[in-house]
Image (tube, rainbow, N blue to C red; front, side):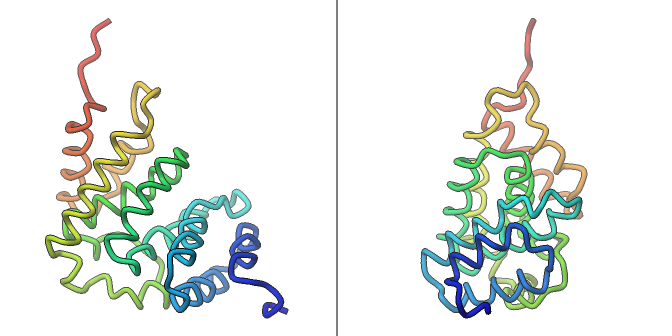
Length: 188
């Protein structure tokens, strides 16, 4: 039955799919396609609500981290989509990943043990190179400068500081907040 659907249609159906193995298989098929359309579909998977279930961030993070398959281009596209989405979960998940990547601690990011993640080899030292860390820092600052401007306290971003296994990732998030001016003294 699955052969009746295009990859784009399967991605649309995935929003109600509550099976991580099916989502994993779909992501691997998108890797195989390996073009801008596949990247766009991966980003869609990163922002779906998955029926509003409690552990939907596990599903979303499969899409967020899978953008690494497209290199720094994938990171920049993810940042642009996050800004356009401006949703709490998107901001939370993406800033967490970008902070870890910019700090060279991608391997400290909690991710489910799935083949689509193993294929990335997130422990590979390539993710600690200047190309990756600089690209992630630029994307992180871009997201910070564009989201949650109307909120007096950027909770979707600040909440991440307590979840990092890498103190350096927290520092990168905090530095991006300061650079953007999201944290400042408010005088009444």
